[in-house]
Every structure is written in structure tokens, then in C-alpha cells.
Amino acid sequence: LLVDHCENVAHIASDFAKSFGMSQVTEIGGLLHDVGKDTQQFQDHLCGMVTPPNYHTHQGALVAKKIGESYSEIPGYVIDAIVGSIFGHHGGLISRSDWETKLSETKSIDIPPFDDVFDKTIHEMMRNLPNIDAELEQHPATLFLLFVWVRMIYSCIVDADYIDTEQAMDSERARLRNHHDTVSFADMQKALSDYIDNLSKNSNASQDTLMA
Image 1 (cartoon, rainbow, N blue to C red):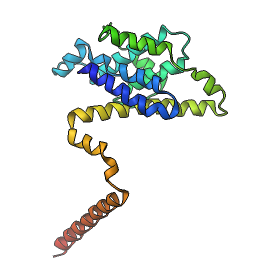
Image 2 (cartoon, rainbow, N blue to C red):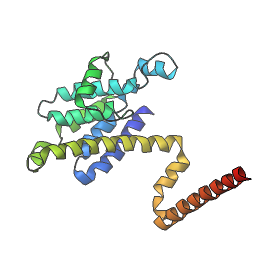
Image 3 (cartoon, helix red, strand yellow):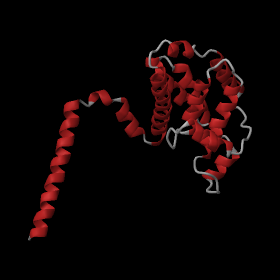
């Protein structure tokens, strides 16, 4: 189930990122985002034993960081975007210095790959990442672009994780999401207006009761 979830998140995140050409980056993040759950620490947490609540995000970030360090040809900010997104996919995106400090305080453990195919897929994708440096250097607002780019990577991974989890936990809501085109803006506006009218009526009824 864990492998299925990671692969689903990778696929959804990759699809989200097609519009800005970063499918492979978000796919790697999606595949690695929950590897920290494949640990005894996380299982202990599920059983109610004392462990940090989002310990798996720390471990997943450590795994991504370790993998990234073996590819010196990949720009550091690309690895940082993946690591930071994994670290913050439950608690929010924080600065590099903050997650580095927190990771330095986290006991590193060796997490075995799910299987050989999964492991080979990660490394194959790392070797074939697009030349992101070239694209950024051509942009007049490089720092601002990088600022936005990191947050787009993060959003793709977090939203993909939420959607795949919703599919498993709330299938009816997921079904509605998948058929969102059947609900028009006019229908949504009417639903909102009706809701506000009901609030207003209930408020007036409460006032009348107090005045009586």
C-alpha cells in the first residue's frame, strides 16, 4: 500500500508540474515523500508510542538529501526543493536553514528501498533531470523565479498527497472532485447565496428571541 501511495502521488504531482516543465522533479519528490514511514519509528508512532508526530517527514527528507548528494551535477537548489518539500509536506514549507537545523538534530537511519525497481527508478530519474540552470539563467528575475518555482514544486507534491489520501479515506468526496465540471459557477453561487440567506434568517430569529 505504501509503494502504491508513493507511486500515485508521484504520478499526480508529475501531471501537475507538466505546465511548467518540472514533471521529473515533482515525480521524484512524490516517490520519496513517504519513505520515512517504512521505519520502526513510524510504526511505533502509529501504535501510540512516544515518537515525534511527523517523524517520517524528517526521515524522508534525510533519504532524499542522501540520494541528492551522490549527484554533484544536479544544482543544489533542485535537491533542496525536493528535500524541503518532503520535510514540510505535513507542516508547511520552511526555510532551508530551518529544515537543515532540524535534520541535523534527527537521528539518521538507513531505510531500505521498497524494492529494486523502485530504487532503480529513482536513480534513473535523477540522472535524467532537465538542465534547469540553463532555463533560470535566461530569466531576468532569476531569484524571484526560483522563489516561485520552489513553492510550485512543493504545492504539486502536497496537493497530490492530499488527493491520493482523499481517494482512500473519502471516496465520495474524491468522486465529486473528479466530476467537478458538472457543477457550474452559477450553481456554486446559488448554494453560497442560500447558505448566507439561512445564516441571516437564523441570526434574525435569534435577535427576535432575545428581544421578546
